[in-house]
Length: 150
Image (cartoon, rainbow, N blue to C red; front, side):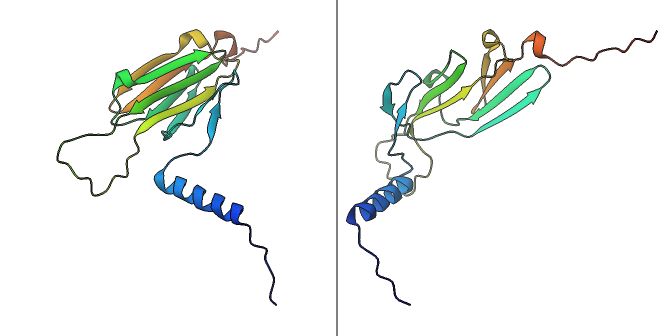
């Protein structure tokens, strides 16, 4: 059975644009902040692991090749934001044959639960991994209740 499909050049153009953006590793969308401000989307997004234990949370963000002073960790109204930039390696007389590592700005944001203490946030940069520790509030930590006998 043959079907007639109407050609839509706008859809095809959007598909090509999306494909090129993914090949180049760039997002074509803008980012809207919690205050409604529009800013350009980050050039790349680092991977994150989040772990929890009874005392708090640990976020590990992989950002190899990024200098410590090119990273910012901020907390505002329970929104933990990590931003930074990986600068491209520039060398005179160097011709890159393949470049798969992304460069440019990056950003990640995490909404903190009510059970954490925003004042307890600590960040450490080690071996290309940014570790962020967030402690739980004392009232929300699990505790064992002893059963009394009469």
